[in-house]
Image (tube, rainbow, N blue to C red; front, top):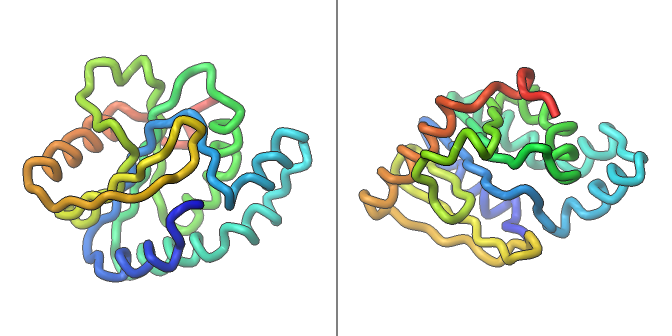
Length: 173
């Protein structure tokens, strides 16, 4: 089970400037993507079906960016990439089309960076949401903090990845 779009929407509704997402895993096993990922691995993936399944997320991003919220996502990935990262890469243009900016960083270019132990969202540079996953990539829970030291570390980590990462269109698999 992953965090519901509704609860994320409640958080995003209170955001005024920015929502940035740092992804550090090479695979996820979240339930709401299982069918589409399986179809992708079989060669049966359809952008139309993927879009239909992700429409509530895409609408949420479109609404936030339309009201001026900058949404950025940085993905740190191992190269060669996993099947899951290929799947994510294939569907990323949908995120970009609704206003999210996405960059990719090969993990070997992140070795000298101080990075948190979990994926995270940072809202308006003041609230961090850590996404906690188990070893199989199943979402377990979210943890939140407004501790200024943790927030500062996470903002610095995200920005260091963002500076080194390449835009989606320039990241080849």
